[in-house]
Structures are given as C-alpha cells and as structure tokens.
Amino acid sequence: MSLFSNAVIGQYYPGDSLVHRLDPRAKLLAIPLMVAATMLADNPTGYLAAAVPVLLLTVLAQIPPRVLWQGMKFLWVILLISLVLQVMSYPGESLWQWGIISISREGLAAAGKLMYRLILLILAAMLLTMTTTPVNLTGGLEKLLQPFKRIGLPAHELAMMMTIALRFVPTLLQEAEIVRQAQQARGGSLTTGNLQQRMRAAVALMVPLLAGSLKRADELAVAMEARCYRGDYRRTKMRQFKFSGHDYMAIIISAAALLVVLWERWT
Image 1 (cartoon, helix red, strand yellow):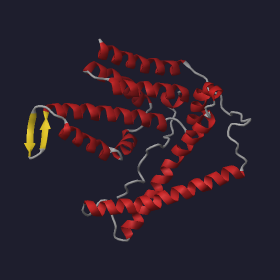
Image 2 (image 1 turned 90 degrees about the vertical axis):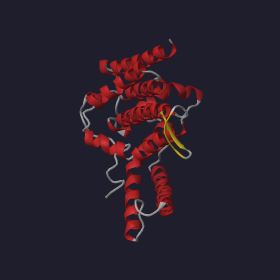
Image 3 (image 1 turned 45 degrees about the horizontal axis):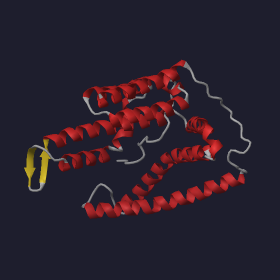
Image 4 (image 1 turned 180 degrees about the vertical axis):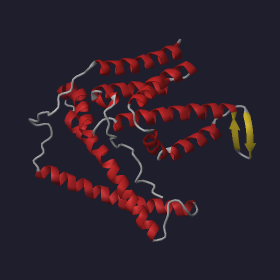
C-alpha cells in the first residue's frame, strides 16, 4: 500500500468553482482571518462562527470528499498523537485511571476542542493550496507585500520562495515513496516491526530524501542563473489581478466570523 503517492498536500486541484475563481489576494487575506477565528474561539457560539466560513468555502470549492480525505489522512497520525497527549496530560475529574495514566472529563473536552481547531486549520490551508495555482499564489502574495518594498522587504523573492516550496511538495512525496519502496524491497518497512525498527527505517528514509532535496535545490539554482534570473528587476506581470464582489464577500464573511468570536470571547 502506498503511503505517499496518494497524498495531496500542497497540490492544486483543477476546477472552475467560485472559490477557484476568487482573487488569490482575497484568499490570502481571508484565510488568516479564519485561522485567527479558529484559534481564538472559546465557546459554542465562537466555534460555530469560526467553522462557518471554512465549511462554506469547502462546499463552494466543489472538491470531492475523497480528495479532501486523501489530504487529511496523511495528517491523522499527528492529530491522534495530539489528541492522546491532551487527554492524558489535562488535569481534572478522573473518569478512568491506570497507574500514572489518567483520563479526565476536562481532558476529553480539551482534546475535542483541540481536534476541532486542527481540522479547521488543515481544511483552511488545503483550501488555499488546492484552489489556487502556485503561480497565482505567488502573484497574489507579491501584490500584498508590494507596499513593504519601500522599507526594503524583498516581496518578489519571498513570494518566489513560497512558490518553489509548494511546487516541490509533490516531488518530495514521490521521492519519499520511491525510497520507501526501495527499502521495502530490501526487507525494511515503516509499518512493521517494533518501535526501534520503525525509527531506523524512518531515519533511513530521511537521509536519502534530504540528500536528494539538496541536490535538486542546487540544480534549480544553476538553472535559474543560466536563464539570467535577476529577481524582480524590470519584471512585468502577465496577469493583472482585480477584485470582484465575490472577493470582497469572502473577506467580509471571514472578518465577520472573527468579530463574532472576539465579541463572544471578551463580553
């Protein structure tokens, strides 16, 4: 069974939905508002308000649930570890105890809130990367950072770095799958054996993956220099971004959710 080849983290999912057509700058402004609302929510009303824009955009994006699940299942291990640690370390009224391990009512509630937040955060991040091409994402980020160029911020370079990082996520996953299959053919496996054997297999996977990443980065740098890449010097834009009513609406809904969360939290 493949561990990495079906992962869709950081990959663009082609489509013509309303969310796909949104200006990338609107998404880059709306997503942080959703993240802030999710992190600051502290009561049922706040949790509901934080979930509305994320779930609404998820439905409007028209991405099949199967594709969303492929992106989520790669992170379930992290989610489950966070859940277990939260349940076992949170003090409160004990519901079950075995030795030093104790599960409390407050721990279960805190773990549920943590899982809720993590799922919304992952969905928000997936919406941004799966409905926006890396080129448009770079252009939108560069446009947003343009005013800061007056104080010396390298807007174009930062946007280019983000694009390259997103572009190579699928490549790294493919390379990880190739290395994993090579190890499996030699008797190694990430999914069998005791904890020590799995740790050795993980280290053996990371070393060639890191070496390949460094080699690929060096090749990319040489290729960019060979094509006389000089950053933002006298560069023009093929696509000019323009806000529409839908873009303003996405930002307004996200900001309204954050305001509701703040109002419910501090009143």
